[in-house]
Length: 231
Image (tube, rainbow, N blue to C red; front, side):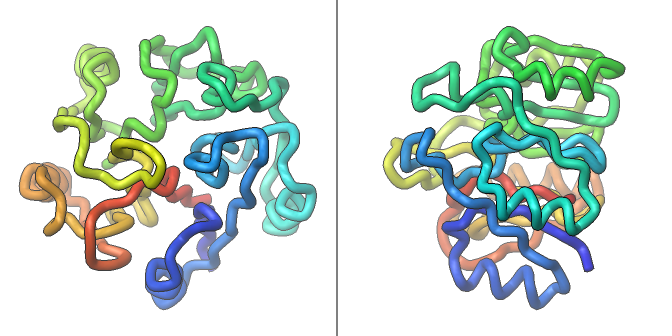
């Protein structure tokens, strides 16, 4: 059975849809060290590098044990999460097959140790993963200009969309990366439906260009739940 890591606040409808497709859901527990908005977001609490999962050093021990029982190698971060930026973003990194993108000065050393063979790209945006939807290793969607410029230079096909129109309760808006996740190499899941998104047509056209199928976990506006991680 294939595993997905999701925010503990995943809606019942979203949860049931993924289970109906044969996925086992690993529910990411919240951290009291982060603000309520992002406390359960997987992309704030861990970073995936192959079969290695780097979790924040205060991660719930029962959840770590669940990961170990699924045969993942689990490592703890060197840094401790804090509420305020930039001390909350050290795991919120973007990793493609041969590129690692983050605000490198704030990246956790444990993460960097697994990515040292990749081309390290420094960007201003510390919320790198939640700002970026991975379509494949050669294509991404983002609303962040610094990420767009850096990846375009590195020959990644980028769809740059305006910010906004994605729900993130407690904040003005959320991000496209946090509202999505690849659940198969060519299947991209959305927390919500592109019919309710201002830039849905542009996103659909971009996915079609790259032969990636969108699946919608429920009807309604997109909501940022801190990415879906396939592990």
